[in-house]
Image (tube, rainbow, N blue to C red):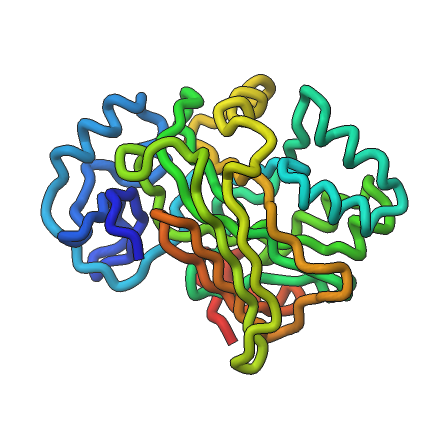
Length: 296
């Protein structure tokens, strides 16, 4: 668990509230939603954080986006990611070209209402057969494109669908349960610039670790600020945006997730994100009703 100051959406006995979390607990902020907060200029956000209200009684941590918030992802930003995409693909050359290109690969991943968080299930498609998690540093920006804070994400991916043809990437990446975000937006004032953060992931099956890996954001081939600048060139995000920056940890080609696997991602200074794998659409149908899915 991180002790750095972070922004959170929480469930309380009185409803959903927005707060600032520190080692002393979670204290209320005078906004009705994270969307309202991320619509503000960064100096205004930091001023509110410096003077929070009463301590909140938290019954559950929720995903950190709401309203018209969106999650986008960057791809092929680490050498390991480029190599993995080339291994699985029938059109391998497109990946080394985008790795070296000026323009990054960016794609829409999920609206806020589709996002799952710590302790909830993540999904693999029933028609895939070869799926992996992608542990990623997440950048949170306000409506003005200013970097507000950092978080942890899991960009779930179907290697079999993406490998069959690159134009199938939307189906390999965008589906029920495909995006998990840790519940905290850790402010930069607590961790500094995201250029040297250790990232680790382990996958457990029936209580045994079947995969583990480590990387660092020092291996990120693109500057986080540049990724945000490219994203805001063509889009506006009035309620803020989360940009997941790509992965440097990819299991070998003979590894595939199974139902019930437990995925834990850790990033230094930001905490952890743990989810259990579920298959198909049905485990995530609660999200369509504005409810939270349950693992298992």
